[in-house]
Length: 163
Image 1 (cartoon, one colour):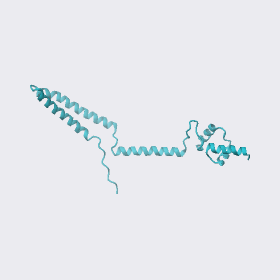
Image 2 (cartoon, one colour):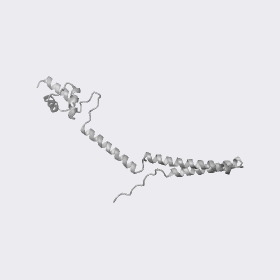
Image 3 (spheres, helix red, strand yellow):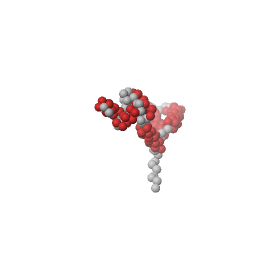
Image 4 (tube, one colour):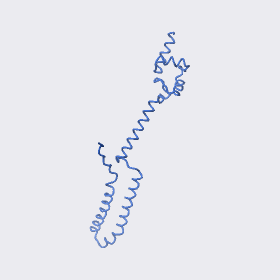
């Protein structure tokens, strides 16, 4: 082997980040060592891309190990979310909509009842007495609303550890 050929091999080793043996094998198999884009295409199809060979955008094509890591990460993330749901840290949107509708309907009913009840109670009273009665009725509605919402979506109690 000439020095020029050895220098070129050394350049390929540095460029592609793999061993002399691998570069010689690529050369024996007719790989286009002078064209990094063609090398990337050829090796990507085989899923054996040397660490020094990057795509034109600078990103490494995904390897089997990288795909496995990503799949494992996604599975772990899904399991974490499912555990959080079981613990009561998340609530289904449909349940929230049902609860809001129920609470809003009950509050609306109380306000309509207030509208019907107040005229007879307030007739002939002075402003101080009216304010006292209206304030008391509003406090009842607010307390009822507070009671309806205070126990929503409490976390599920922790299960005791199994023996």
